[in-house]
Length: 424
Image (cartoon, rainbow, N blue to C red; front, top):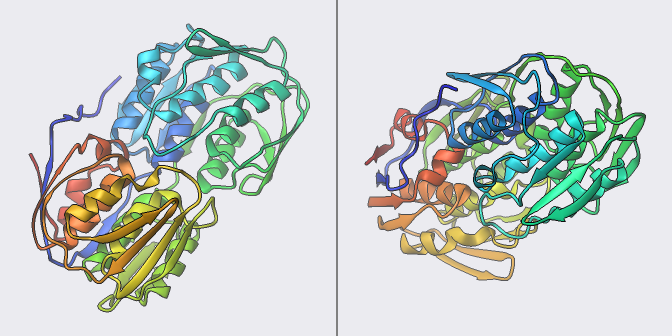
């Protein structure tokens, strides 16, 4: 496997802030969506080509996990080629699984391909409780036996049968994992209260391109006619709406003029509505989104909820941008119970933020000043980058290996917009 450069955990960014971002930048393929496509490729013995895959650490690590169960993975630029003639192991290495949350998708892929799998609880950002009960309920409804085996979860399913499955909550990874098993189950599966996120819809479209029969993707009810053998495909990953949002918010926070291309504006309705409510000029066309004329920002109230609501992953960078709004803004986090790790880091830059349970209050406009801060997870790191770009003086941002997991070529893209940012 051709690897991306290995991120160095001791690396840091030095950001000279206080200047507007201006210009145009194209974003990568979706991090989350791409992470779903690699396990999907394990469902067929034929070659699969994936395009517009972001050059990030999480993709490299998930590719390594797929190789450990029998796949050959080749990475060239933003193209990933996979071939898995047979599964050689149904027990992915625990040390690899522990690195990222999406690794648990091998559970559904292996159940679908060979009828058994064993995985430890997955790793990933520590942003709150993300239980696995939805995954297991779906597997069991399809006929799998799921139990604890030491430190791991083990599932066996000599025969999968379609079923009507109700999710207690619209889990994104739960929906994807159950889809992997359902496409190989005999008969019809109906998933009620499925996640409607664009990344889930795209994953279902990929499975359809491999020969699956799926309808309703992008809605809360997905129907799968299973029991078919899947074939290879050549598939393109959708743009990363969260990366688009981060660059737009950086433009707003710095009072700049930023246009982001390779975007799908229809995936960003909640963000664009809030930006307009903040009195930001937002221009949308088929090729991208532009934000400008954001001299005086109005405070807003934001509810971070499942799609199509405001994305929880954009909550931290939105809070950073709201430090520049004239008045008190509120962000109500209703998805993860530990999403506010960024708050203390923004306070180091001078932000006036208070928290109460799952509510964040931001008072502005605040004159931010450079400081030594850390990226505590992917999106907390994005929040600090947005704030540091708006702050006067020098900010030193540590633990940027988290940002390497989610943002491809971050330094280069920000530099293209006029940011003064250096990796050391």
